[in-house]
Image (tube, rainbow, N blue to C red; front, top):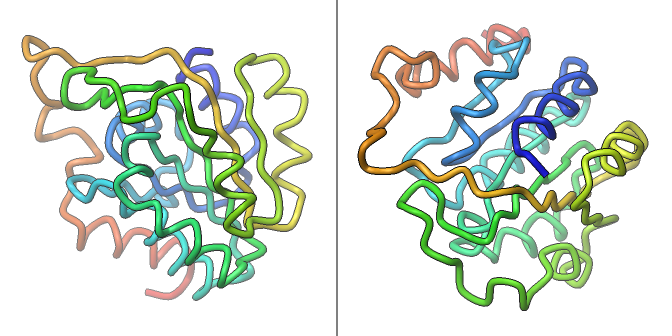
Length: 195
């Protein structure tokens, strides 16, 4: 499935949820989001978006927290699954954009591509639920229900790789997701009424 199409579905269902993005998902989500004051991109901290999402979910249990992770990012911090399951935040929804490659660095295959199931790993760690979708229509039909369930929940979306080539370079420095971390956190705190 196309990553952008899946994100468009999620944007329509997010309500006022905070969305935390990692690596390649940052730019793609920024193009779909209609509530950027509740978005928190975690750039240059591969594998840590889910850890930040957990902290926020625990600090603000009344706020729905969605994390858009990559399969390569999650592999670099698999321990987060046990930590999230152990804390059991009912308001955390962990989406994994599973494209089988490290898209940000040129498309190298991830280890054990096609051999492991992030959904099964999440359930084994103790997540309340886990789903896998490789079809946009099926995801669209089920996404609203998943976001109403008690978390932590994982949703693996099998997506087509969108690889950034060296010729494309990096995103412009004036892109909205290139604000300083302090600015982004200040905006989020203001949106949450804690500034």
